Image (cartoon, rainbow, N blue to C red; front, top):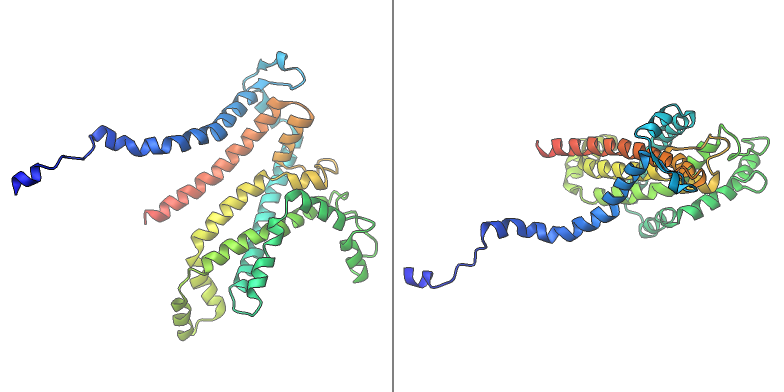
Length: 305
């Protein structure tokens, strides 16, 4: 038997080749990621350390942390940062609550459930530019359907210039983005709800648990990871979004709808101050990296339990 076994050639790869083979398969993906992510980040970092003006590229000079020092004394930066905080918390929070309620409704059994699940995707499927144009017309002072409806129901006595009023402009845009983004939460949470074993609800009903108790004791804990991932992704997307604001107000009136990504865009592409805009973009990147780090740390802690 020993001679028969020894007659077969050994096919085990050498340790060096066996250890590095998976990395060779990952190398193309890593190179593509480096090309489309790492290189632009490094270029942005380089720009942030220079006084780079698009209309005078030959006069580019190294200024170190000069752009960052200027940003700390820039009043518009602090205004934009405050608006970004309101923007992210308000939009993501209300999108989540509306999406959670919609998912719970769509998880029930009714005869037109399939149609409802299809219709709820429509706002999410529309391009952001179309969303911005559509809501701009709806908010119009003269012919907007929102003013018309509020006047008919006696809620207001005169039309409101929603996008021209400093006290309402930011919140009007937030409402438009909430309407566009809540289907993402609805669909994601609905997918999570369908993985919760029905036996848990049946046992809870036998024990006399109310629907509210089932929601907080079974449903939400069972889909906590789904909710956390959806919140992280949506926070990143909303924090980086500027297209709806750009279409609806362009950042006005004044600086009342300025957010950090929009301000970086305006300084870079309107003011042609690419170095200053890159520094603003880098600050936003670091803030988002802190959010991602907190999420990864929480996820790692949960997995280690």
